[in-house]
Structures are given as C-alpha cells and as structure tokens.
Length: 73
Image (cartoon, rainbow, N blue to C red; front, side):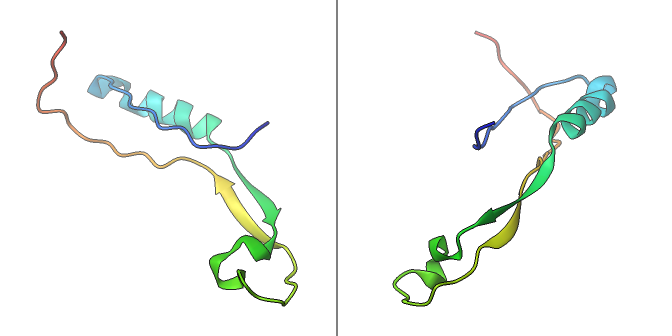
C-alpha cells in the first residue's frame, strides 16, 4: 500500500449523511509509522543523529456543509 492523500467532494441528500459518514469512517484507518527525525525542519543542517519518531497518519477530516445551490451544465 502506498501513501498519499486524497480529496473527495461528495454530495448526498440529508437522509444519506449518516450512512455516508459510516462508510468513510470504516475505510479511513489511522496507523502509526516511524519516520527519520532528520526529515523534520528542526533537524535539517544538524550533525546530530536523531532516532526515528512515531507519527500517526491516515484518517479522515470531514466537513459537512449545506449547499445553497448547485448547477449542472
């Protein structure tokens, strides 16, 4: 599995919101991975060797916004 980000713009009817959020939650897993601390901006240019640090990646951020209007052309 490769890393990366995806942005989805999903329009659903109000009665579909809960089931849509459940699907997103089910498929948006968080995981912990180790990265080299030397890639962090504070460590760049330093001669000190830093051990890897664990970070949490993945998951989803969802904004629920009522659409005032939409247009199909």
